[in-house]
Image (tube, rainbow, N blue to C red; front, side):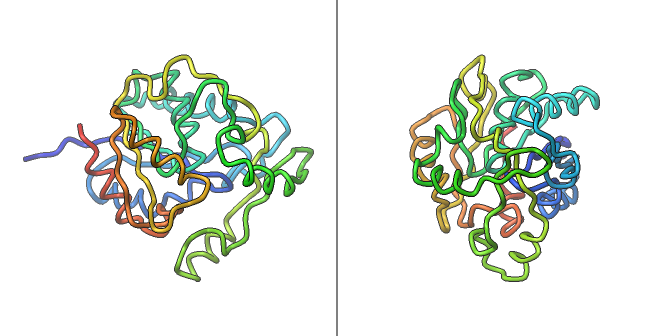
Length: 241
């Protein structure tokens, strides 16, 4: 049976860029699909563009522009961690271009809620103490190498060297959803269970209670797109059509 080519667009987590998806993207392409990752303005490969006006609305507009400028349709839109928030917002605004929404160990967006309003209060308190100002912009600095949950020391060190600060407004500004999360599009949630990431752990049980979301646990850490790209690619290739 000939399998029709799919288009995957992958969005990175906080402090990361398109580079974080390279090991998954190469596997998706090797399987005969179109796949690419998109960095956010001011972060990762676009770190030089950091400015005070950056927030989730800017990331949303940039991602929609990429989809529309390239006229991408029937897209499997994949967000890792923070990127899942932007993926959810994109699906809310232009569902006609999205075939399937995939969240990797992130949150399910809710109208009027910020990331800091969703994650555990003790984690918020710790992160707020770390806030710095870079290029006139309040940012969250990236975490120490030991917190990446990547077992391979060389891979963890390489990953840490690529990280860049992330605009604080992305965490503090409430989002706006016009429709319930997913906007009626098929959804898959990939949960990292070995070990479970404290920020995401509570979301796993909530998602399992949502019958419209396909729940897929994998035995990998939170940064699975780097530490277990073969598992992630396999899950993405098996997304129902």
